[in-house]
Length: 223
Image (cartoon, one colour):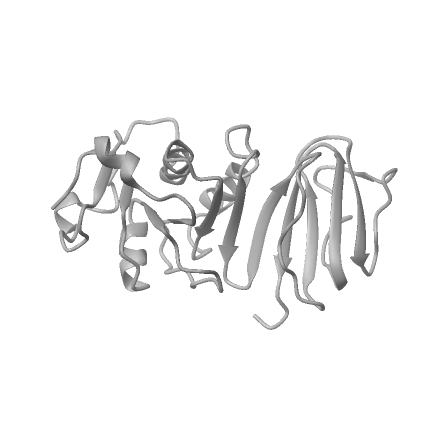
């Protein structure tokens, strides 16, 4: 039986997962099982394929007809938006997570489909709405987080992994340790630069952002 969005206060956002749409089913991360699962439109089908019970479905339902929703998800909440909207389904799902009180969110995406959707999906975790939260995007063997000054890098990273730093602001600056090629606080990372590409993790990495916003992508070499 579907529930009203007025029941959202009863949700437990302690460990929130957002399941993105797209043509490919995501992989399950090696994380504790979620207390709250939010599906972005057709991400509902992906979540069900992964064996997850969905709590909330958010989107315009252009890829997921309402009549396909399984009422076996006890208490499923539906937040429907018009197709003529200014935000993507993933952006709306992240907004719902924030409204529900989530401060730590894992986004699961299959990583295939339209290039513009993939790029925007990564940019979303660094926008002004989301940069204050801990949001980790999982895509196959890779994870991505956005950092700003004062926000610590707290991912567990295996030695031998690849770590890439992408500047999202002009004149971004960061210092690092634990990498094969470390940065000093005086080093500038320009947008559209390959300076931070495919660094190697030698031991526990420490990344301190001094200016700007950085997207950090960690890729396991075992993946």
